[in-house]
Length: 69
Length: 168
Image 1: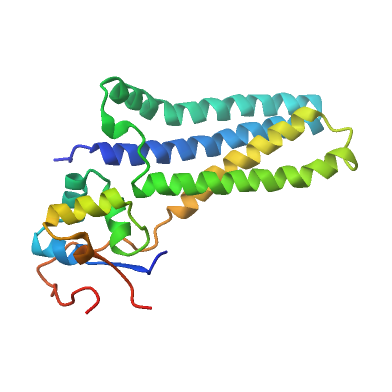
Image 2: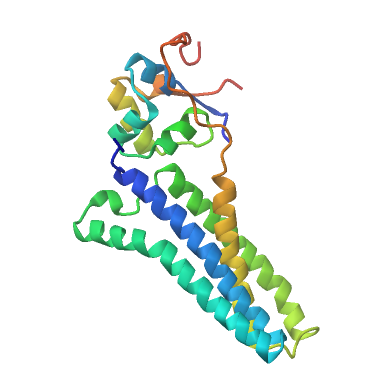
């Protein structure tokens, strides 16, 4: 499990009223991929991270950030 | 109404089926390996078991392989096996662990085959190594994918969001 990478996917999903399955379909991954990214169990590839950020219309750093040491 | 399976979900299912099939196939190789050390009659039963395991493994994976090939023939790039999703990543990790397990197993077998069990048939060493390696692949895949409570609730109505900016 990776806690080094924090993310705000759930916040953005809530703002956009999207379920994990909806976002997964839009990005082209499975719902399991989205759920495991959200809880920090899976560190996504750069492509997935950029697709998520692009969908929400924000820079990738606003969705993903490094945890404070 | 049942929601249609997306390509990403299909790729996940394909990998789950493959892992299950290799786990069953490992039993087929284990049956072959054991058959060298049992009576002729028991060896015959084990050969039947091996055939059953091999057919079972094939039956598990065949439907998804057929669908996968059909999608590939349609030149669907989503089925190109790009390892970006969670399942693909876990499958790769399981394969790495299986390779390491097989490597360690062979290192252990190597001195044994020269001294303690020098008269054992060479086929046993190949079959047992294959069995251990593919069993390790299947077991590791399912261990890595076991549910650890990552299924979050999607009910946004009852919760408060948007409270914290990253690094704030």
